[in-house]
Amino acid sequence: MIDIHTHVLPGIDDGAQDIFESFEILQALANQGVTELVATPHIISGVYENTRSIIDRKLIEVQDIIEERELSIKIHPGAELYCEPDVISKVKRENLTLAQSNYILIETELQRFPDNFEEILFNFQQEGFRPIIAHAERFSPFMNNIDYLLTIVNREIYIQMNSGSILGVYGNAVRDLALKMLNIGCVHLIASDVHGLKKRPILMKDAYDFVASNHSEAIAQILFYENPKRILNNEPLIHNFEGYFDERKKSGSLKNKLKSIFKL
Ligand SMILES: [Fe+2]
Image (tube, rainbow, N blue to C red):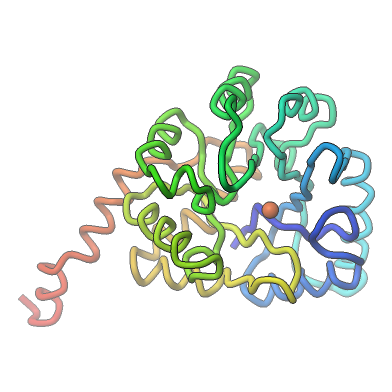
C-alpha cells in the first residue's frame, strides 16, 4: 500500500513529536503493508508555519533513521494545506505539492466551508494543480448534502478518505457518509492520516480488507495502491466511479451469489 496522508515528520505539527515517535509510526505502517508514504504536515497560517525547507530538513532526519534501522519503507515530501486566501501563492512559492507532482492535498474547517472554497479549488486547477480534498467524509456540509460532494467530484476534484472513517473511528455520522461514498464510488484514495500511535488507530490493513470483501479486491487495489502510485508518478487518477459501482453490482449481486452457492 502507498499512504499519501501522514503526519510523521517530527515536531512540526500535531503528529509525531520526536524522531522516535516518527519511527514508531513508520514501523506500524510498514507492519500493515505500507511500503511508501507521503509526509503531509499541516500548513496553517499562525499555527503551523511550515515551509519547504523545514519539511525537507525533517524529511532527511526521518530518511536517516529509516536507513540506520533498515526499515523497508520509502518517504516523500508533501503537505496538508489549510484552505485560506493566500494558499495558492504559498504552494507556488514553497512548492508544497505531494511528492513533487501537481497534486495538492487540501483541508478546511470541519463544520463549514469558507465562502470561497470552490473558487480556491477552481483557481488551483486554473494554475495547473490537481486538488484532492483530505478526509472529505469528515466534513459536515457533505454529510448534509452528498449531492454537493458529487458536484465537486464531477469538476475533477479528487477525494481522499481516512482508513479509520470506514471502521467508525470518527463516529457513526462519518462512517455512514464514508460507506455511502464507497457505495457510489465517490472516493479516489484511502490513506491513514496518522498522527501518532496513541491517538487513533491506523487501520490501513483493516480498511483494505473491508473494501476488498465488501466491494472487490480490484477496487481496494485502486484506492490503496494504484491511485496513490499515480500521484507519485504525477499521472491522472482512475476516477470512473460509475465503473466502481458496476463492478460492485457484478461481484455482489444476489443472482451471482445464488449462482455460486447452487453452482447454477
Ligand atoms: Fe491530516
